[in-house]
Amino acid sequence: MSTQVSLLSPAAAQVQTTVKSRILPLDGLRGLALVFMALDHAAAFVGVGLQAETYGGLRAVLQSPAYWLSGLLTNIAAPAFWLLAGVSVALLEASRRRAGESEGQITRFLLIRAGVLAVLSLTICDWFWAGTVVYMQVLLSLGLSLALLSLLRRLPDYALLVLVVIQLALFQAALPWIAANFWQTPNYWSALLLGYTTVTYPASEFSLGGWMPLMMLGLLIGRNLHRPELRQPRTWFAVGGGLLLVWVVLRSWGGFGDLTPFSAGEEWFRFFILSKEPPSLTFFTFNLGLAALALGLLYTRSAWLESGPGQWLVALGQAALFSFVAHIVIYNLVSRGVLFLSLPGPGLIKAYLAWLLGLFLLFPLARAYRDLRRRHPRSLLRYL
Image 1 (cartoon, rainbow, N blue to C red):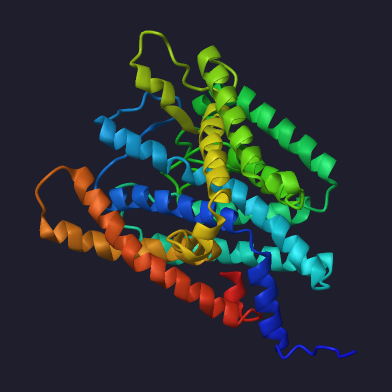
Image 2: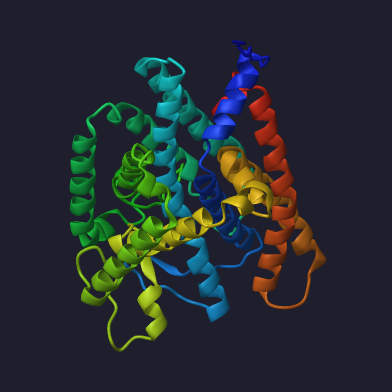
Protein backbone atom coordinates (compact mmCIF):
# COMPACT_ATOMS: atom_id res chain seq x y z
CA MET A 1 0.00 0.00 0.00
CA SER A 2 1.68 3.19 -1.18
CA THR A 3 1.58 6.52 0.56
CA GLN A 4 1.37 9.74 -1.45
CA VAL A 5 3.81 12.43 -0.45
CA SER A 6 2.88 16.04 -1.10
CA LEU A 7 5.45 17.83 -3.21
CA LEU A 8 4.01 21.21 -2.33
CA SER A 9 5.95 23.60 -0.15
CA PRO A 10 4.17 24.82 3.02
CA ALA A 11 3.50 28.18 1.36
CA ALA A 12 2.15 26.54 -1.81
CA ALA A 13 -0.01 24.21 0.25
CA GLN A 14 -1.48 27.18 2.10
CA VAL A 15 -2.24 28.91 -1.22
CA GLN A 16 -4.02 25.78 -2.50
CA THR A 17 -6.08 25.49 0.69
CA THR A 18 -7.01 29.18 0.56
CA VAL A 19 -8.09 28.98 -3.07
CA LYS A 20 -10.23 25.89 -2.44
CA SER A 21 -11.87 27.41 0.63
CA ARG A 22 -12.99 30.61 -1.09
CA ILE A 23 -16.74 31.11 -1.45
CA LEU A 24 -16.81 32.56 -4.94
CA PRO A 25 -20.33 34.04 -4.82
CA LEU A 26 -19.31 36.10 -1.79
CA ASP A 27 -16.18 37.26 -3.60
CA GLY A 28 -18.34 38.08 -6.60
CA LEU A 29 -20.78 40.10 -4.48
CA ARG A 30 -17.90 42.02 -2.91
CA GLY A 31 -16.54 42.69 -6.40
CA LEU A 32 -19.97 43.84 -7.60
CA ALA A 33 -20.19 46.26 -4.67
CA LEU A 34 -16.77 47.64 -5.64
CA VAL A 35 -17.93 48.13 -9.23
CA PHE A 36 -21.02 50.07 -8.11
CA MET A 37 -18.94 52.13 -5.68
CA ALA A 38 -16.49 52.90 -8.49
CA LEU A 39 -19.36 54.39 -10.53
CA ASP A 40 -20.29 56.70 -7.66
CA HIS A 41 -16.70 57.83 -7.20
CA ALA A 42 -16.02 58.17 -10.93
CA ALA A 43 -19.00 60.53 -11.12
CA ALA A 44 -17.71 62.55 -8.18
CA PHE A 45 -14.28 62.84 -9.79
CA VAL A 46 -15.76 64.41 -12.95
CA GLY A 47 -18.12 66.67 -11.02
CA VAL A 48 -21.36 64.71 -11.45
CA GLY A 49 -23.75 63.98 -8.59
CA LEU A 50 -25.68 60.71 -8.43
CA GLN A 51 -27.68 61.49 -5.31
CA ALA A 52 -30.46 59.01 -4.66
CA GLU A 53 -30.44 59.22 -0.85
CA THR A 54 -31.00 61.78 1.87
CA TYR A 55 -28.70 63.18 4.56
CA GLY A 56 -29.68 64.59 7.91
CA GLY A 57 -33.37 64.30 7.13
CA LEU A 58 -33.09 66.93 4.39
CA ARG A 59 -35.04 66.47 1.17
CA ALA A 60 -32.86 65.08 -1.61
CA VAL A 61 -32.32 67.24 -4.69
CA LEU A 62 -32.71 64.79 -7.55
CA GLN A 63 -31.66 65.17 -11.16
CA SER A 64 -33.18 63.26 -14.08
CA PRO A 65 -34.11 59.56 -13.67
CA ALA A 66 -30.87 58.40 -15.33
CA TYR A 67 -28.89 60.10 -12.55
CA TRP A 68 -30.86 58.94 -9.53
CA LEU A 69 -31.38 55.43 -10.89
CA SER A 70 -27.59 55.21 -11.22
CA GLY A 71 -27.38 56.46 -7.66
CA LEU A 72 -29.71 53.71 -6.45
CA LEU A 73 -27.28 51.15 -7.84
CA THR A 74 -24.29 52.74 -6.12
CA ASN A 75 -26.14 52.82 -2.78
CA ILE A 76 -25.89 49.04 -2.58
CA ALA A 77 -22.13 49.28 -2.09
CA ALA A 78 -21.78 50.64 1.46
CA PRO A 79 -24.20 48.27 3.29
CA ALA A 80 -22.77 45.31 1.37
CA PHE A 81 -19.20 46.30 2.31
CA TRP A 82 -19.99 46.60 6.00
CA LEU A 83 -21.85 43.29 6.12
CA LEU A 84 -19.23 41.43 4.08
CA ALA A 85 -16.45 42.84 6.27
CA GLY A 86 -17.95 40.93 9.18
CA VAL A 87 -18.36 37.80 7.05
CA SER A 88 -14.66 38.04 6.14
CA VAL A 89 -13.70 38.18 9.82
CA ALA A 90 -15.66 34.98 10.47
CA LEU A 91 -14.01 33.18 7.55
CA LEU A 92 -10.59 34.41 8.64
CA GLU A 93 -11.22 33.16 12.19
CA ALA A 94 -12.06 29.71 10.90
CA SER A 95 -9.07 29.46 8.54
CA ARG A 96 -6.61 30.69 11.20
CA ARG A 97 -7.94 28.23 13.76
CA ARG A 98 -7.54 25.39 11.27
CA ALA A 99 -3.94 26.52 10.81
CA GLY A 100 -3.40 26.21 14.56
CA GLU A 101 -3.27 29.91 15.46
CA SER A 102 -4.39 31.07 18.90
CA GLU A 103 -7.18 33.54 19.54
CA GLY A 104 -4.54 36.08 20.56
CA GLN A 105 -2.76 35.71 17.22
CA ILE A 106 -6.04 36.14 15.34
CA THR A 107 -6.87 39.27 17.34
CA ARG A 108 -3.40 40.68 16.69
CA PHE A 109 -3.79 40.12 12.94
CA LEU A 110 -7.17 41.88 12.93
CA LEU A 111 -5.82 44.83 14.91
CA ILE A 112 -2.88 45.22 12.54
CA ARG A 113 -5.22 45.09 9.56
CA ALA A 114 -7.46 47.68 11.23
CA GLY A 115 -4.42 49.93 11.60
CA VAL A 116 -3.54 49.43 7.93
CA LEU A 117 -7.07 50.49 6.95
CA ALA A 118 -6.79 53.65 9.04
CA VAL A 119 -3.36 54.57 7.67
CA LEU A 120 -4.40 54.02 4.04
CA SER A 121 -7.51 56.12 4.58
CA LEU A 122 -5.57 59.04 6.03
CA THR A 123 -2.74 58.90 3.47
CA ILE A 124 -3.14 57.49 -0.05
CA CYS A 125 -6.95 57.68 -0.20
CA ASP A 126 -6.99 61.20 1.20
CA TRP A 127 -4.10 62.44 -0.95
CA PHE A 128 -5.49 61.14 -4.25
CA TRP A 129 -9.14 61.97 -3.67
CA ALA A 130 -10.07 64.68 -6.15
CA GLY A 131 -13.81 64.42 -6.14
CA THR A 132 -16.28 67.29 -5.89
CA VAL A 133 -17.13 66.30 -2.30
CA VAL A 134 -14.99 65.77 0.78
CA TYR A 135 -13.45 62.31 1.14
CA MET A 136 -15.45 60.67 3.91
CA GLN A 137 -12.75 58.35 5.29
CA VAL A 138 -14.74 55.14 4.86
CA LEU A 139 -11.66 52.99 5.47
CA LEU A 140 -10.98 54.78 8.73
CA SER A 141 -14.48 54.00 10.00
CA LEU A 142 -14.18 50.41 8.79
CA GLY A 143 -10.80 50.10 10.49
CA LEU A 144 -12.07 51.37 13.82
CA SER A 145 -15.07 49.05 13.58
CA LEU A 146 -12.76 46.15 12.79
CA ALA A 147 -10.61 46.97 15.82
CA LEU A 148 -13.70 46.87 18.05
CA LEU A 149 -14.97 43.69 16.40
CA SER A 150 -11.60 41.99 16.98
CA LEU A 151 -12.46 42.21 20.68
CA LEU A 152 -16.23 41.76 20.55
CA ARG A 153 -15.87 38.58 18.48
CA ARG A 154 -14.82 36.74 21.65
CA LEU A 155 -18.37 37.11 22.98
CA PRO A 156 -20.76 34.16 22.54
CA ASP A 157 -22.84 34.35 19.38
CA TYR A 158 -26.07 34.84 21.29
CA ALA A 159 -24.57 37.82 23.14
CA LEU A 160 -23.41 39.33 19.84
CA LEU A 161 -26.89 38.87 18.38
CA VAL A 162 -28.49 40.58 21.38
CA LEU A 163 -25.99 43.42 21.04
CA VAL A 164 -26.80 43.82 17.32
CA VAL A 165 -30.54 43.93 17.98
CA ILE A 166 -30.22 46.43 20.84
CA GLN A 167 -27.84 48.70 18.94
CA LEU A 168 -29.98 48.68 15.81
CA ALA A 169 -33.18 49.30 17.76
CA LEU A 170 -31.77 52.15 19.85
CA PHE A 171 -30.13 53.85 16.88
CA GLN A 172 -33.25 53.59 14.72
CA ALA A 173 -35.48 54.87 17.52
CA ALA A 174 -33.13 57.85 17.98
CA LEU A 175 -32.89 58.75 14.27
CA PRO A 176 -34.73 62.12 14.51
CA TRP A 177 -32.70 63.15 17.57
CA ILE A 178 -29.42 62.09 15.94
CA ALA A 179 -30.22 64.01 12.76
CA ALA A 180 -31.15 67.13 14.74
CA ASN A 181 -28.12 67.13 17.03
CA PHE A 182 -25.25 65.52 15.12
CA TRP A 183 -25.75 66.63 11.52
CA GLN A 184 -22.55 68.45 10.45
CA THR A 185 -21.38 68.47 14.05
CA PRO A 186 -18.04 70.28 14.62
CA ASN A 187 -17.09 67.51 17.06
CA TYR A 188 -15.38 64.67 15.19
CA TRP A 189 -15.89 62.09 17.93
CA SER A 190 -19.62 62.79 18.08
CA ALA A 191 -19.81 62.33 14.33
CA LEU A 192 -17.75 59.14 14.47
CA LEU A 193 -20.07 57.61 17.04
CA LEU A 194 -23.46 58.89 15.88
CA GLY A 195 -23.47 61.60 13.26
CA TYR A 196 -22.03 63.10 10.11
CA THR A 197 -19.53 65.86 9.47
CA THR A 198 -17.57 67.35 6.60
CA VAL A 199 -16.36 70.33 8.66
CA THR A 200 -13.73 68.44 10.66
CA TYR A 201 -10.58 66.62 9.67
CA PRO A 202 -10.93 63.79 9.22
CA ALA A 203 -14.49 63.97 7.93
CA SER A 204 -16.89 61.23 8.99
CA GLU A 205 -19.95 59.80 7.27
CA PHE A 206 -20.07 56.20 8.49
CA SER A 207 -20.83 56.46 12.19
CA LEU A 208 -19.93 53.46 14.31
CA GLY A 209 -23.30 53.53 16.06
CA GLY A 210 -25.19 53.36 12.79
CA TRP A 211 -23.01 51.09 10.65
CA MET A 212 -21.12 48.74 12.95
CA PRO A 213 -24.16 46.51 13.64
CA LEU A 214 -23.93 45.41 10.00
CA MET A 215 -20.36 44.21 10.55
CA MET A 216 -21.37 42.30 13.68
CA LEU A 217 -24.32 40.77 11.82
CA GLY A 218 -21.95 39.77 9.02
CA LEU A 219 -19.73 38.02 11.57
CA LEU A 220 -22.70 35.95 12.77
CA ILE A 221 -23.70 35.10 9.19
CA GLY A 222 -20.13 34.13 8.33
CA ARG A 223 -19.94 31.75 11.30
CA ASN A 224 -22.93 29.87 9.92
CA LEU A 225 -21.92 29.61 6.28
CA HIS A 226 -21.05 25.95 6.81
CA ARG A 227 -24.78 25.27 6.86
CA PRO A 228 -25.87 23.82 3.48
CA GLU A 229 -28.95 26.03 3.31
CA LEU A 230 -26.75 29.14 3.28
CA ARG A 231 -25.05 27.87 0.13
CA GLN A 232 -28.37 27.58 -1.74
CA PRO A 233 -29.62 30.28 -4.13
CA ARG A 234 -33.22 29.91 -2.93
CA THR A 235 -32.16 30.85 0.61
CA TRP A 236 -30.74 34.17 -0.51
CA PHE A 237 -33.67 34.85 -2.82
CA ALA A 238 -35.95 34.32 0.20
CA VAL A 239 -33.77 36.57 2.39
CA GLY A 240 -33.74 39.25 -0.28
CA GLY A 241 -37.49 39.07 -0.75
CA GLY A 242 -38.05 39.18 3.01
CA LEU A 243 -35.84 42.24 3.47
CA LEU A 244 -37.60 44.06 0.64
CA LEU A 245 -40.96 43.24 2.23
CA VAL A 246 -39.75 44.74 5.53
CA TRP A 247 -38.61 47.82 3.58
CA VAL A 248 -42.04 48.24 1.97
CA VAL A 249 -43.79 47.92 5.34
CA LEU A 250 -41.47 50.38 7.10
CA ARG A 251 -41.57 52.84 4.20
CA SER A 252 -45.36 52.69 3.95
CA TRP A 253 -45.77 53.07 7.70
CA GLY A 254 -43.16 55.79 8.26
CA GLY A 255 -41.60 56.52 11.62
CA PHE A 256 -39.37 53.91 13.21
CA GLY A 257 -36.40 53.15 11.00
CA ASP A 258 -37.44 55.72 8.40
CA LEU A 259 -36.08 59.24 8.88
CA THR A 260 -37.72 60.70 5.76
CA PRO A 261 -41.27 59.27 5.62
CA PHE A 262 -42.98 59.09 2.25
CA SER A 263 -46.25 60.96 1.84
CA ALA A 264 -49.00 60.32 -0.70
CA GLY A 265 -48.56 63.76 -2.27
CA GLU A 266 -44.96 63.15 -3.32
CA GLU A 267 -43.69 61.83 -6.64
CA TRP A 268 -43.83 58.01 -6.61
CA PHE A 269 -40.11 57.60 -7.10
CA ARG A 270 -39.33 59.29 -3.78
CA PHE A 271 -40.52 56.07 -2.16
CA PHE A 272 -37.03 54.77 -3.09
CA ILE A 273 -35.09 57.78 -1.75
CA LEU A 274 -33.94 56.75 1.74
CA SER A 275 -31.75 58.15 4.50
CA LYS A 276 -28.13 57.05 4.19
CA GLU A 277 -26.88 59.24 7.02
CA PRO A 278 -27.92 58.73 9.68
CA PRO A 279 -28.53 55.27 8.17
CA SER A 280 -32.16 54.26 8.42
CA LEU A 281 -33.47 50.72 8.63
CA THR A 282 -35.30 51.33 5.34
CA PHE A 283 -31.93 52.12 3.70
CA PHE A 284 -30.41 48.94 5.09
CA THR A 285 -33.30 46.61 4.26
CA PHE A 286 -33.73 47.94 0.71
CA ASN A 287 -30.05 47.77 -0.23
CA LEU A 288 -29.24 44.54 1.60
CA GLY A 289 -32.37 43.01 0.09
CA LEU A 290 -31.02 43.78 -3.38
CA ALA A 291 -27.58 42.49 -2.36
CA ALA A 292 -29.12 39.21 -1.12
CA LEU A 293 -30.94 38.77 -4.44
CA ALA A 294 -27.66 39.41 -6.26
CA LEU A 295 -25.92 36.82 -4.07
CA GLY A 296 -28.63 34.28 -4.87
CA LEU A 297 -28.10 34.95 -8.57
CA LEU A 298 -24.34 34.55 -8.19
CA TYR A 299 -24.88 31.19 -6.49
CA THR A 300 -26.72 30.05 -9.62
CA ARG A 301 -23.71 31.03 -11.75
CA SER A 302 -20.79 29.30 -10.03
CA ALA A 303 -19.20 28.22 -13.33
CA TRP A 304 -19.49 31.80 -14.60
CA LEU A 305 -17.51 32.95 -11.59
CA GLU A 306 -14.78 30.34 -11.99
CA SER A 307 -13.93 30.74 -15.66
CA GLY A 308 -16.41 33.14 -17.27
CA PRO A 309 -16.61 36.93 -17.19
CA GLY A 310 -17.58 36.78 -13.51
CA GLN A 311 -13.98 35.89 -12.67
CA TRP A 312 -13.16 39.61 -12.92
CA LEU A 313 -15.67 40.36 -10.17
CA VAL A 314 -14.14 37.56 -8.12
CA ALA A 315 -10.64 39.00 -8.59
CA LEU A 316 -11.85 42.39 -7.33
CA GLY A 317 -13.57 40.80 -4.37
CA GLN A 318 -10.55 38.72 -3.43
CA ALA A 319 -8.34 41.83 -3.43
CA ALA A 320 -10.96 44.21 -2.06
CA LEU A 321 -8.76 46.49 0.04
CA PHE A 322 -6.15 46.80 -2.71
CA SER A 323 -8.92 47.46 -5.23
CA PHE A 324 -10.45 50.18 -3.06
CA VAL A 325 -7.17 52.05 -2.66
CA ALA A 326 -6.14 51.51 -6.28
CA HIS A 327 -9.45 52.73 -7.67
CA ILE A 328 -9.04 56.13 -6.01
CA VAL A 329 -5.60 56.58 -7.59
CA ILE A 330 -6.86 55.33 -10.96
CA TYR A 331 -9.94 57.58 -11.05
CA ASN A 332 -7.85 60.56 -10.02
CA LEU A 333 -5.81 60.05 -13.20
CA VAL A 334 -8.64 58.95 -15.50
CA SER A 335 -10.88 61.86 -14.52
CA ARG A 336 -8.14 64.33 -15.41
CA GLY A 337 -8.02 62.88 -18.91
CA VAL A 338 -11.81 62.88 -19.34
CA LEU A 339 -12.09 66.47 -18.14
CA PHE A 340 -9.17 67.55 -20.33
CA LEU A 341 -11.00 66.28 -23.42
CA SER A 342 -13.94 68.63 -22.71
CA LEU A 343 -16.34 66.20 -24.33
CA PRO A 344 -19.80 67.48 -25.28
CA GLY A 345 -22.95 65.97 -23.86
CA PRO A 346 -24.43 65.43 -20.39
CA GLY A 347 -22.19 64.95 -17.38
CA LEU A 348 -23.57 61.45 -16.81
CA ILE A 349 -21.95 60.30 -20.07
CA LYS A 350 -18.60 61.56 -18.82
CA ALA A 351 -19.15 59.75 -15.53
CA TYR A 352 -19.85 56.44 -17.24
CA LEU A 353 -16.90 56.93 -19.61
CA ALA A 354 -14.53 57.54 -16.70
CA TRP A 355 -16.03 54.59 -14.83
CA LEU A 356 -15.51 52.14 -17.71
CA LEU A 357 -11.97 53.37 -18.41
CA GLY A 358 -11.12 53.01 -14.74
CA LEU A 359 -12.51 49.46 -14.56
CA PHE A 360 -10.48 48.55 -17.65
CA LEU A 361 -7.35 49.43 -15.66
CA LEU A 362 -8.54 48.20 -12.26
CA PHE A 363 -9.57 44.65 -13.20
CA PRO A 364 -6.13 43.39 -14.36
CA LEU A 365 -4.36 45.21 -11.52
CA ALA A 366 -6.58 43.56 -8.92
CA ARG A 367 -6.06 40.16 -10.48
CA ALA A 368 -2.29 40.62 -10.64
CA TYR A 369 -2.18 41.71 -7.01
CA ARG A 370 -4.41 38.81 -5.94
CA ASP A 371 -2.08 36.34 -7.66
CA LEU A 372 1.03 38.00 -6.17
CA ARG A 373 -0.43 37.77 -2.67
CA ARG A 374 -1.23 34.10 -3.21
CA ARG A 375 2.40 33.42 -4.12
CA HIS A 376 3.58 35.13 -0.93
CA PRO A 377 0.93 34.24 1.67
CA ARG A 378 3.12 35.02 4.69
CA SER A 379 4.38 38.40 3.48
CA LEU A 380 3.13 41.84 4.51
CA LEU A 381 0.80 41.69 1.49
CA ARG A 382 -1.63 39.63 3.55
CA TYR A 383 -2.65 42.79 5.41
CA LEU A 384 -3.72 44.56 2.19
